[in-house]
Amino acid sequence: MKLFSASNPKIQKGVDFGYLTHIMHLAPGKLSGRQVCASASAGCLAGCLNTAGRGHMTPIQEARIRKTNKFFDTRPDFMDQMVKDIRAGIRKADRLGLIPCFRPNGTSDLRWESVSVKFAKNIFEVFPNVQFYDYTKHSNRKNIPDNYHLTFSRSEDNDHKLGQALENGMNIAAVFNGDLPDTWLDLEVIDGDIHDLRFLDPSPVIVGLKAKGRAKKDTSGFVLNVLQTM
Image 1 (tube, rainbow, N blue to C red):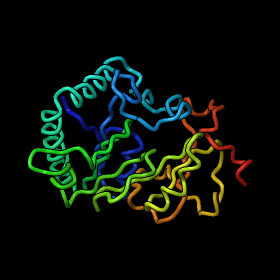
Image 2: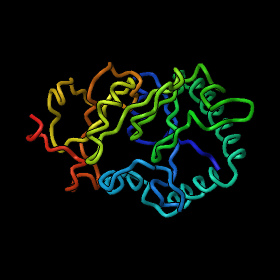
Image 3: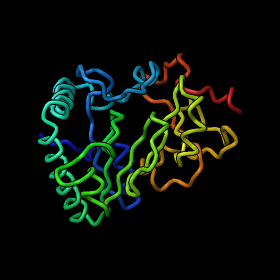
Image 4: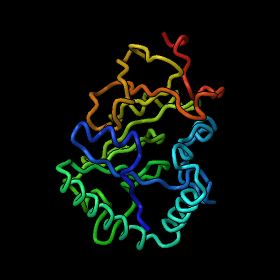
């Protein structure tokens, strides 16, 4: 069972910038019966892109649940597979003349810096020259490995954590319901939909994302009203 995929449409945009991203999708929230998004809000879970594209298909949902359960039930085997998949992803990117990068939390929010691998502190120590990146709602993550870039994901219930996230060196990703404003919270808003390569973003900035899928109907406050932010 492969853990990573490089077929996500937004991930494909990175190819134009010379990068090939492999992303891992687990079953978000407690969909598998195990919690992988401990700081997720109701609005975040309601608008989750877990079912976007081919994600809505039953076999894909079942595969994500199996992967999640494997992570909890047979952690050493899961991490061994993760290492194998990353090595395969590096070889694939090499064949294509692209730079490999990996996003382990496609639909989860696990603290990978704290997950050990055989003979290593974490996956980033195994691949010190490979770029990893993720979005997170855990604002207190700090002392992150140099090759793991994190962007804090704003939701309707965590505005009070934005300052801590910025202090810990993270940009802020925020979802808007229309054309992006020029600034928010006195910070420049950049278009986060041009590509998904968050480690290329300047800092500090707001990474503006347009509401997609179920998020377009959000009423929780997860999606920001552009007129109210200007």
